[in-house]
Length: 443
Length: 182
Image (cartoon, rainbow over all chains, first blue to last red; front, top):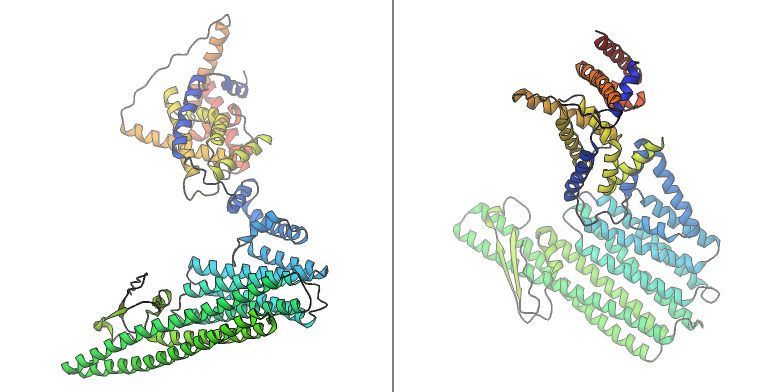
């Protein structure tokens, strides 16, 4: 017999496993592997990375990543931009700057704006810009919350984009103002825009609280976030103004009651801003005062021991702290003044609203916004000055001492051994208040 | 070709979802081939069975394990693990006293017993000749003629180029003829 045929015939001989063994082993294997798998389905959501690695089983990896993926991005852009296919928007919706789908997300947004402007649909164009501003704000928040090291570049780009988007919204509002009567956009749309920009403002406030301000780059970012926040706030007020004008021009898509409610909301949020600024500055002052008196004691101590080096360095610190204390005091006076002015404006505006004098009430709202902005600037400067000496102000910002606390006790402990080495004060601060919330700050 | 697409689909399910069912289907596809591959290198049925089930369990653990690199071919992975398992067995054997079990060839019933006896005798002869060949020749011959794989597939499994594989098969056949003739 031919040797190859002989070899082939082996297939049917005893070199094969017996069926009994095949079946029993199969059952055994099933039992063994099922033990190693979790019962909970961990892959319930489509994971895009799985899709790429899955595709690379069928196609070479280089083809998947260099050809298939870019084509997929293009397809998504084409599909969503022209038809607004919701499921795909959702896929790219979560993308953050730096991720592969992010360009698709942005491209889709641009296409949507172009489509809206070509068809002359001003309503959706304005709404789109407001919506995109909100997305950018959420992105900034997500990046900051994720706390990835060296994310400054990402935050910067996102903030920059957000700025542009808000500018776009503002431009649209200005256009409407210029041609208030003939513009086809209803006051209803403007109301939506206003709500969205207010949301942007709230998100940015959270971002500002969470931002680290240890390095100069961080401080620059924090500053630009505040700038954008002011812009968002101004835009919301601007939208309010457009709404009032439209209403006075005879647009009835928003009723007078609704308008009054919106005005009230704007007033209240401005008032809340002013109060929170006041509280922050007040809290900073309490702590600065405590630190100053502690440093003074320290100077006295070192003078009594007669050590010239320590005395001169602690004397320096005392001078510094005294200067800061006086700045903070001034800041407190200024924010208090702002609060008083703000209260007056709010009262006036409320009276005007009561008299149905919406145009003048709107003017008051605008003035109030200016006051609130000033108060915030004072607070930011005060925080910045103190931050240069005290590393704990970050914590103070988070848990500012409530004004309604019946008594506040601030203990300051200074670690004297490291004063000389660093320019900043190594302090531990324990704040005890008898208010309902008792924050304990340690650093 | 359709078989290879099916294999890839199963592999996809296995890799992304860690789907036990996909693995059992892959087991059904490959178990006989792996068993035969092992059979020629070990002394008996039991050992071949043990090693085969060990290979499949190791494959599963490899696939679901962390940091799994891209698996180009499931069969390639199986044969690689099978080869490793056999090397482990040889190592164990070198430290343990060997027990030789002589197997009886079972005769099937019915009137064809004489024919079967003949065939079994032929088979036993060729198997013993195969076992005398060196490892690489054994592998290519079983893969080429018993499992009836393409040269390209064999090349992937043994990790050689296509031409080199062809040459190896040719030499293996020549050597086997020598053993049977001599």
